Length: 119
Length: 109
Image 1 (tube, each protein chain N blue to C red):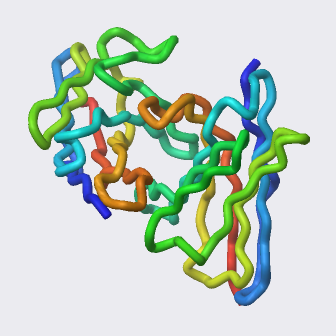
Image 2 (cartoon, helix red, strand yellow; image 1 turned 90 degrees about the vertical axis):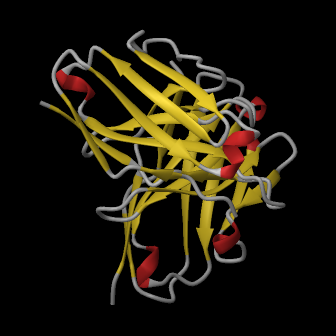
């Protein structure tokens, strides 16, 4: 079964760092892009960025460029989303999703990781 | 970056047809993906590319595009189709990424 399993929910303080993960299984991890999508409470979906694990080509949403870092460790079939200094506005649900090519949709999604940033 | 605009909400009687639209300049170049999201759940891809339904998606879901507008049509809406729907497309700008639409809440009456 093709799956993306995300790390558990996090509660952090402003200014702290955080790295959440997304582990793929049941498919060839390096042949599919992994995208990250944010959903703030009561709001819509926000595309954050995408990475191709085979060569680590990465693209970011312009507002988030420099605010987050997307990476992968293909040896353990895992993608990451990282913050160096969290803000309260980073609170939300974060999903990773698999995408076969940039012309296709995101066909498999992780279960989501809740991030709460509060003092 | 590009923007994709959707109507905030639409309603449809059970068994009738509803069309959800998505408007944006990038749709002149790229086909969108369409995602269904029910409360408390991750989104599900229902249409992508040129009207391609992933395995397991009912045939009552279909997609089309014309100019700067794309549409998702549900023909014979069922109670379980009540959900939020989002379009998603490549971004026309230099960042070469993607953008989601503003989302449409579909209510089945």
